[in-house]
Length: 576
Ligand code: CDP
Image (tube, rainbow, N blue to C red; front, side, top):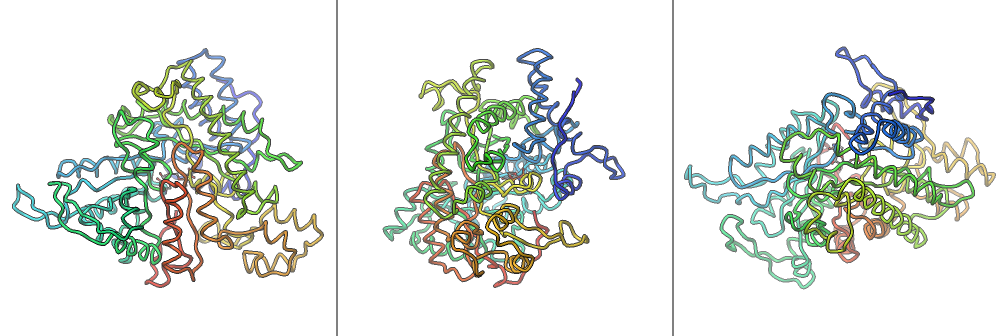
């Protein structure tokens, strides 16, 4: 297939460096064997091969060109595994997996093996460990005592260390334990010890029943999953307080609202959902996987300062088709995952560059106007995304588990059981030079090394530079000050500018939660978001944020208090 006259991708120097380190194919000696342009064409043409099954050769090429253009213009990028692996012999293209962990040696070590295989292929894994019998419980065959979920999690953590994702980056896991598991207190405290479970985000799985028990200060029963017996009782509020205190100290655990997730499980006919992928945005059934992709909203703003709705619609439609095609050409690490994924065909279309949009439109992130626009944008994306998935279902057939699904109840044929998810876009937002996911910008200016051993790069937010020039405020001295502080908060600048150009730490935790909830209202899956708190925030602030997330209908919540780990002995992570 020829590539015709292709537009050149518009990667910045920094983005090109990220691509060279992480994505571009290399030979055995580590020499690059493709350019960024080659990479995009490799991805576009590999994904468009899926079109062959549904159309003719000509339209395969047409779609490859459309996919290429959408990526080269940085309007959309798929998740990292698609960029790294499409068109290569190990074409595992998804970022998100959930694996079951049963209460037997066989099942635990099967799960461990599957984890290694998923990580090797570039994916991240989530687990709910609540089926495991608690610490100290009996083990009949050996007359011994059980180690409990937290000990087994350490095995998964160690495996993650040993098996780097595709040799490129450290693997990621989500570990969940339900609030009624007898080991929940051990679990909640698990990450207080330096470096322990460092490849895990952990979350307590809660229900409305638990949250009501917290609010009413009731007793809470802990149940042995092996026998169904109540083995202990704790104060629900004590458990919640401990959880919030640990989160205040370390950032973990988060909370997952399991029945909120179950209420939007599109295929209860296949079972209930008890876990999410590592960053929490993708609830999945056991053995299910999902491929993600994100639209760069920063490219959807017209020069006159409005959202370009027709461009956004066009991009959503092509992106949904792209993500559905990814499932067709995806090579899954094990058969169980292939079968489950093919039966629901979940995709997760999301966004990046949201904070950039708000800066461009001069709307403060912490304002009702921003929340309303978030709802408008995300409801539009989900509506068009559903329309497109329904159109694909007409042409290609609905997802195989459609019968008995919530979509059948609604009388709507769908190609994909879910369409939208808001991912963190940790790496792809660097490639697109957009703000990540729906997060506010972290700093308006900074100096840092892109990679170890390299010279410092100076970064100043482009939209801020434009605004300063427009208002006649630009000076090198001012830029120096912004570089020192990272924020405009303490600077002598007009209020309207200071209100708009806010950073993650200028925004109160409450507004962080409100923004997450606004996006959640119109997202099929979940929203990846970190609720940033200042160092001085109290445990009470953490409680408030967790309760607000519950009240506003979030599916989960993760907080991070600035420099919280400085209170412990610092451990140096390898990042990513
Ligand atoms: O930007 P990129 O596509 O690399 O990933 P992301 O949006 O930051 O993360 C999306 C998902 O990729 C996460 O929720 C994980 O499931 C997975 N991931 C991973 O497995 N390992 C990492 N080091 C980062 C992300």
